[in-house]
Image 1: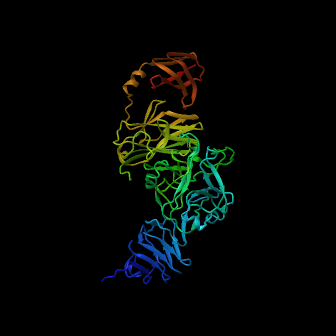
Image 2: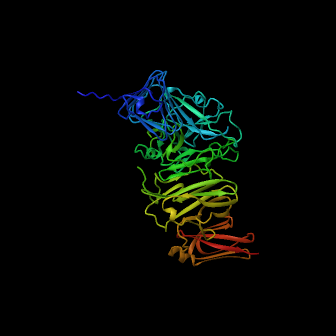
Image 3: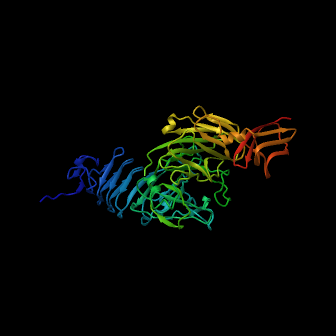
Length: 565
């Protein structure tokens, strides 16, 4: 009879290296089949290296025993973890504890998380990787934060807009929701001096399915202001966002885009209050980065204190927003396929005042040119100084996925909104896939310009307003319209002479809009009856204007108007 022992006990005979087989009894580095025991030893084990993966069937840390899981390494445990009250399990920043079976853990661990550099008025979005029964409070997370600077998010108030909810330092962090916490009061009050904050979650690590209630209010489906839910990664390891969003249980409940706070901008009275309109100082809404299965968008031209574009992994203890689809029962609880082919283009809109907005347009396996939950995402909010987006019917998108195979005849409408008169530029941030060898142009339909973005950014002036029809992303410089548009365009005449506007068209017209060279709408005529000829007195300053004639057949025709006095 042969008896095989699947147990490994640490002895630390040689050194502290977990991966040295001579440090174990019997000799050999543990595998996923081994029950691992860590007793009190002269040399305490450390899982070290770079992206090293350790394994155990179960993990028991005895009285006086210590284990350290160093940064950027992981341990996968098939079953439970049991830490004696006088034992110690330290999980360093960016290390990962992964468990396979849905079994409860016993004992307390220390999970270290280090934030991006912050100053006093920055907030970090958190989730708790330890159980609610651990009684770990917001005050334990950040004891030197002011007592009124802990918040959670209520998705809907009285079936209307969501709002922030004041929490106290005594609030026990619940793994089913997210929180925001301001930096310690001892941090610098100037944004020029930023330092990271180190938090230590002490408690029993969560394991198994975490059911998070998802709420929404009574606003129409198209209104997102009552549908955002603040969650947090409740595990001691990063979560693959693609797998989380693709989970069959989550698909009908939450949208396919998630949002991360980046705290790149200081609070300002110029930023819009998200709810009542009575907060004096507010944070910038465009500091939310977006991510879905196509990829992510950033919030600043250079990765600042908020970090880079989301990577597709939700860090341990990181808070994030998700959006209810608004189609399942409010409060329904849900738990947390790889896309093989992607060709992506990131575009930025920047103004002279320093405002920044980024969008992503990409062609991916599984995407279509209609709205796709997995590949299309709306911006978290458009209450920004400038907002840049691509458009499909009824939606303005921060991320837009389009169908393969790619055609260089494809065109994508681009829109923007501005609350300031300024000079702007559209520019390529970066690209991948077929865009390495593909021309990229932006067409300005107001000024009839097609510009090569790979040669230089496109600069233009704009007034205040929303502009959904001015720009088109395209991949050829061929300026020919389709035949129907060409026929109509060739038969529209317009002029201004002696303060008299005359417009003659071969097709019935429904509306005439006149813009100045900055893009500001200066005059609009809504025709009560469709007509082919229109005349009206008009008083404009001398200069160049753009006429847009909307025809009954849905086509919009542009004409340059020169007003001389």
